[in-house]
Amino acid sequence: YYAGVKYGEFDLDKILESISFKKSERYYIGIKEEGVYAIEQYILAKHHMNAQVYRHRIRGITDQMIIRGIEYAIQEGDKKLKQLFSFKNDDYFIKEYIKWDDFSLMNYLLKSKITKTKEIFDMLSQRKLFKRIYKKSIYDIDDDALKQIKFQRMLQSIDFELLKEKEKKIGNIKSLNCDKDFIIINVVSISNPLYRLPSRMTNDEEIIVISDDKKNKSNHNKTIKLMDIPWSIMGSIAIEDKHQYLEVYALCDPFEIMKNDKYLDRLEKDISEILLN
Image 1 (cartoon, rainbow, N blue to C red):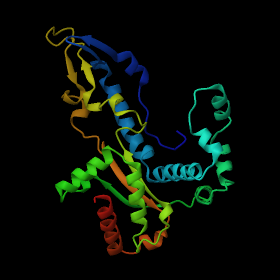
Image 2 (tube, one colour; image 1 turned 90 degrees about the horizontal axis):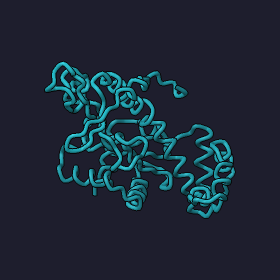
Image 3 (cartoon, rainbow, N blue to C red; image 1 turned 120 degrees about the vertical axis):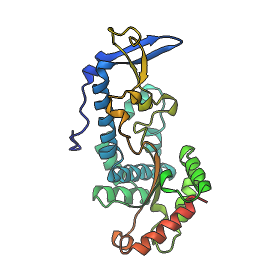
Image 4 (cartoon, rainbow, N blue to C red; image 1 turned 30 degrees about the vertical axis):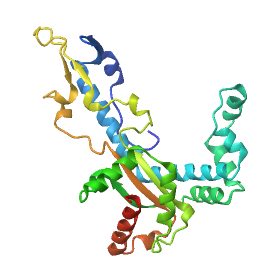
């Protein structure tokens, strides 16, 4: 609502009312057929929120600038922040933690004695953001099977130390002319915007519908996947971008970056070479 996005509405009461379960060889938690339309609303709402809010370009850049600024402060010895971001299950930690909110944290970081941290939060307060200079998903690499495999492995098992090394190498690209400390590689997960553990994720395609057709005994209590119901729109459309992709952000002159297509093509090749080798 506060992001100004009109999507995202669905009939929660109908979904809750439609939840059912079936026992055969194992227990199935699913929904009754009468709840299919409400579930379709929910899946489309989640998709639209992903597209419009969760993976918005500016959202990704600002999130990563905040994270990087805090990381620099902790690495450079800010004891207060290290304590704040090191969870301890005791009363003292809780009392200290609840004293902080967005406003108090931002004010604290704007006064930071850590140069890089202060620079980043000064930029955030003035809305001088990093620029996205690169974006790539597994589907964009169609010319080399080996590169596809390497890229997929890098996205699936994120090695933060390796990403930091690659950030420095990207910073060494002469034509980019950016501060090496202000290069950020961000791996974005579309199917997991709330950062749940993979083992706890539910694939929309696996949602089970339990038939409530009492007139046809052979169909009553029968289970079918939502995507396989012929009259459901979920079987006729593909919710796009349910995959991970990678973006690179940098503090640089946007006019320099956008000045010509040849420059952009060369930059993309240079960054791809670093990321895929």
